[in-house]
Length: 402
Image (tube, rainbow, N blue to C red):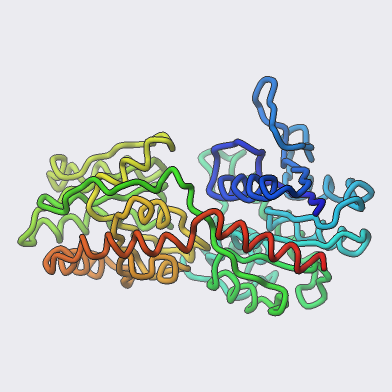
């Protein structure tokens, strides 16, 4: 097949989870002898950037408002896109432009639903940053945008508000029930069901999960003995539920077992969390690692007994679960988004409360289940091997072109 692939960043970038997955898809398609051209969201700020895969750049630089600019840039390529069997966008925010590609070229079209940008201007589906939203009407979205678009400076707030208002305009520029885009790819069944609730065509949404980065598949190194080493990896932001971690450790400190917690990541709540740890005199049992380089993360997972995820929002697909399972590290996570389906037998999911998290952790170590869960994690991760996921993508592409 001759494929045009719209990338959220550029091949080789070590950015977000979406970037990693896009890289794996692109590499897999190229290795399967498909002729692929990658359209990058912007030109990399790297001197003499080179790629083994043919690349084009939609924007020379990031300019406000980026999603609007990117949609315009895609529409400018319509004549070029005519040459492809299929044009695939890994940017959900490009649904309006991809609808134009579908209507005005002979290429088959596919859009990945890797977040909520197709239905929520904030991309998180959190109304007032508090509850899961089920309605993107003007009367709900505008007050939510205005109230939640805070920034550290006045300019930051104004720009963020304007960006989200622009996103709202893009979302409302298309009608889900009338879309002619040939197919949509959802990262999880949870994401698929969410888009169905916003009237996207059910028969055109295919669920294919993220693949694991195989550098995370390595032998487990901890011995599952006291003190039990707990791990959190991720941003230190409110929607990640990290404010529960100090209270969780307070509960665990009263248990019959010893626990230690490593927090790998950075974010706006770090100073608040550190202060909470100091106030509880937990400096000896809670270790703030800050940002850990990506290449060092696999061994961090492998050297801990249990990965803990206290998330609060409906995350589309938590790659951290795959990373933990790759190292055969058991998981305790809150039951939000797609967590239960991803974790499977590799751990337990609980209600998003301090008591539920701490009680499940105590229960697991008390029944000596960690080694059993570790073995199951090794089995579960097979579902996410790159070759398997890449084959599913190839089959989806073929079905759209046929």
